Image 1: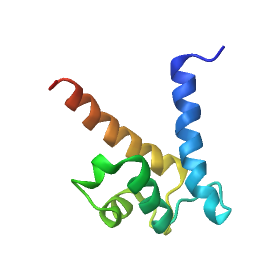
Image 2: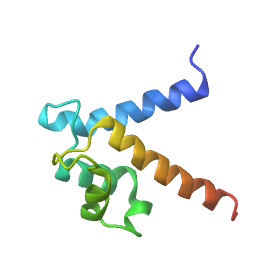
Image 3: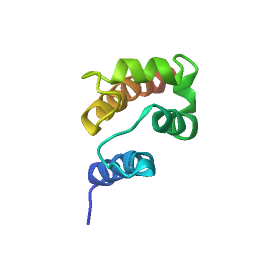
Length: 89
């Protein structure tokens, strides 16, 4: 039986693939893919930065796509924000 952390990892991978596979590349989120992901999965985090700003920040290797490792940088950033917010409640 998968642990909570393993389920969370599977969920993150599933979300990434939901949007990366729209153009048939399981290894790349393009600008419009990331925008869709943010608009449907992370609306609270669009209040501080728009999709283009996130894309520029996350595309570390400047290849015009967000690979899974770059996506995990986004997860870390919003995870830190969510953790901080959880202590304000």
